[in-house]
Length: 506
Image (cartoon, rainbow, N blue to C red; front, top):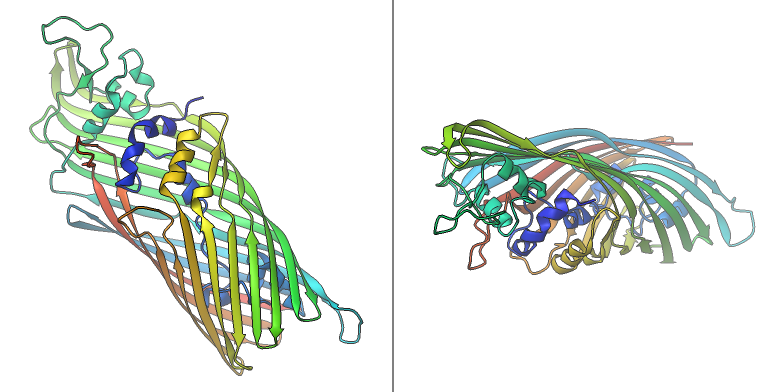
């Protein structure tokens, strides 16, 4: 089976160095989309910037550093509802468009069963805790796009003409979106040579649609990646804490892209392309950690997160609808009005291995007044791998190695305590996963929070702002000088999230 996404990537892979993504996406984009790490957890952890690798006794230890479960002295249950507002500001040809997407969810739900040893019981092993949690690790609910009342520098017809070059007419209908462009008369074979002689099975194409169009596009994505974690953490002599766990991850992702062009004084009035992509599947990973207390005031943590081994299923379909101005196409004796073409629903299955992650952290306690905690992560996004029996993944894996690289993340935060009240603040920086790019795709996050601790119940609130930029290329048109003249949109993203955690001790 040949994947639609695979067909597209063979031509345009060279253009990606100049732009981050294009409408006809490849599997190397999935490799990044489903592997980027952001520290998640309870409102307490969110409030301190996600710094948690050396901080024990929080429900987030179940999926974070499981060694922290060894700090629990009583059992605990918590639930964390959240609301996120995602603002995307798109800039195309100097024209600004804002899109907002709101999403309510319960990104964290956890239970810890603690079995500590009593102070009079002998031995260095001081007991441990088992935890289970449900945690959202990625949010895909977003919309962005552009609308232009300025003529663009190219048309998607230019992309189709480049892609069709060299493909015999008796094969072109099977070539993805370019085949749809042929079926709906956006591109047509050059049927005669310069001497007027007919060409048998021509492989070069042109279009009777000239000029530059007005363009607009909307990209809508939905879904999430969620992990159910099962972990255990043990306490040895209140100095060394060791833990391990497994994570079972599920992915649900849908994408709808609608790209439109409008022409004036041309045979084509307007054209619309819609692509629908649905991906779902499951994965598993292993999580190991240790926290050591050299002195009472200091925790040192180390965490190893294995690659997540995913098995993913996809469905893809596309449709082109063109409205011509009752144009008489002389070569075929046809009067063109509404012309459309669509693919069948194309199914595929592939495996994705994400990068492993190494994390370290330190927490310093300022007596009973609070603490300061910091983390650092190392990931190599170029180590992601795609495998499939439905298509040859070599080109995608080569692209993963070429455009992705290592990233260093760091987080720092603190908590101030007075009586039953807690005040928190934190900052996180997530490194750019791309290499050799003139666009900075790093992410910054600013966090703060409040909390109250009672004997059997606690309530925490956190507010976070996440900022990152991206560049979107609707389609590539590579000129003779190597410049991509396809429409490039700069997108600034701001995600504002509020979270409340309610926890019960028993």
